[in-house]
Length: 129
Ligand code: HEC
Image (tube, rainbow, N blue to C red; front, side, top):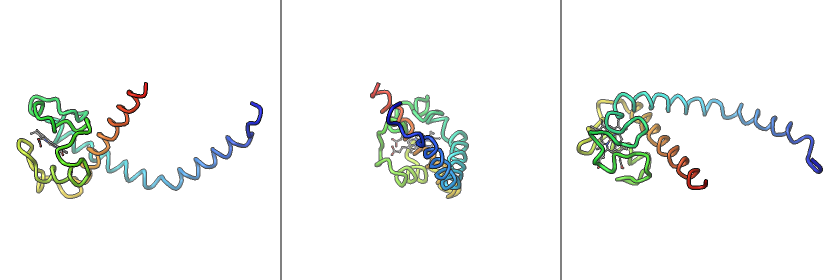
């Protein structure tokens, strides 16, 4: 324990508290978006894309790009290209333009991005082991 700054825990605590206060509203609205996106995904997308997004379903299993969590995209994987696919569809995926509001599309796209980001993180951690 020699050389350890006795104040460090308090400094860290204060810093975390300060950060939390600043970032709460942003985190809150982001969580609301993701939560709304998850609900839409579960209603409209899981029949083909599966709950976890791997696309291993009877309907979509033979389409490699139906897997939303393998880091491989038909487009470039950006939110804009994901949004394009959701709006326009791509046989056999139906288009959701006009069926979901702009806000709902934004929410479900944010959720898909988050699903794939989490999967990527998991994969990185697994390869590190
Ligand atoms: C009837 C089945 C079906 C439904 C419902 C469906 N999809 Fe798809 N989706 C697919 C298939 C099949 C593909 C792969 C087709 C292809 O090659 O582009 C795909 C591809 C995608 C892609 C990949 C785009 C890329 O660049 O690789 C995204 C993103 C996507 N779907 C999102 C969604 C979202 C979000 C929903 C719900 C709002 C949804 N899908 C509903 C079948 C479906």
